[in-house]
Length: 304
Image (cartoon, rainbow, N blue to C red; front, top):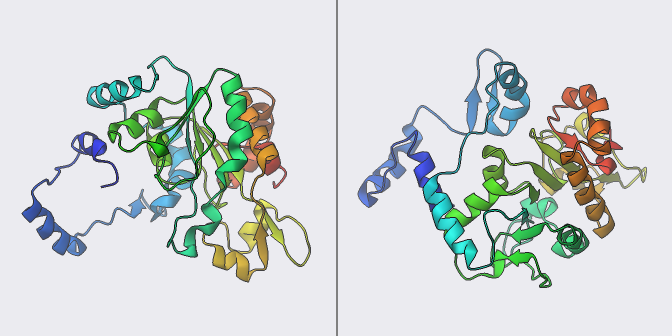
């Protein structure tokens, strides 16, 4: 289990097995289970891998007024997390963004290469948030690249240990989650937190309450940047592994500091329903046709 602090939320709907002997037994027989949680079925013609649940089902959930967050913070989570965060000067009333940027790990297969970013390219955007009185709290693994210390930036990737409840609390309470479509983003999604996603692959799905910056792809032959429909027409819209893109003679162009700074400005504007929000509303039909349930940053809107 990636986060033991999540067990109380599982216990609301499932029997949780804590005994070692029973765990070993269920581990041996799990393949006999008639249900596979990797797939969903929502009536005739509406089924598939769970990564396609939102774009397939969400419009119907909206119509039925079932589009509510799956979870609400429990008191036990809040109590443990706030006690720990207090030692770092973080109060429940603080305005903060939670940051998680996926990086290349030693020994990791190349499968995730196009999902990894260089966090150095996010420093200017961090400084912008700090200058507006918004704290930035970074979460992730200890191996992640060190970023410069500054007031209002709290880097928990460099903290030896912390309660598991902290990541749950931060993802649930942040003004928005900012970073990669990976790991803790699932917490933010299902607690109803807004999202700003960076360098996203695949192109084929997004979530509501989200501003998305897709990872641009360039054709090495034509030297042109591919549109969203070009990616779909090549059968690459549900793929994040690099090999199919490389075989198609495509090269990614990861966002630089200037692009990330513009995206963070646009996220604040999007939350205030400013210009970038209105531009997305004007293209809402185009977005829904491509199963994009949230909004796009200005550089990604150029791919429509």
